[in-house]
Length: 116
Image 1 (tube, helix red, strand yellow):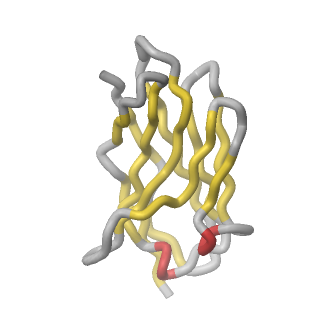
Image 2 (spheres, one colour):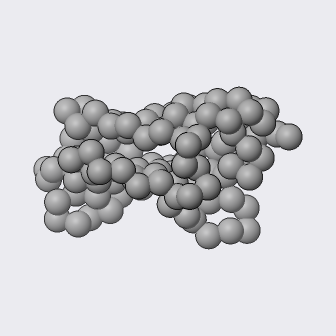
Image 3 (tube, one colour):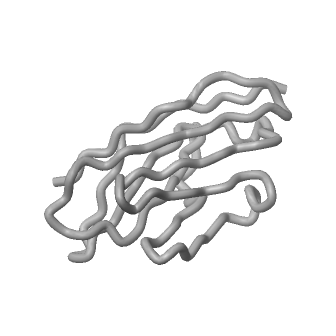
């Protein structure tokens, strides 16, 4: 099992920034993908951004140009720099990872609230 610990959520005003971080515990298998999903009240969980061990990055359209995902493969950490936050970014943000035997793991979630 891989444990994921998130930090960095909070309450900000529209236009401000936050940085989320996530650290994965030691894994028996190589972690090939890390990323972030979010879930707003009454909505389904949606992909925000992912990054592979090779550096391949994917963003959902609504955050392109505002959010930046980065990863430290040696430390198995992933960060999400969120700039120009909007009220519609309000959600619980979940860190996730996938290992090379295609097991998916999730963090407990961290709340991000953006006031208008």
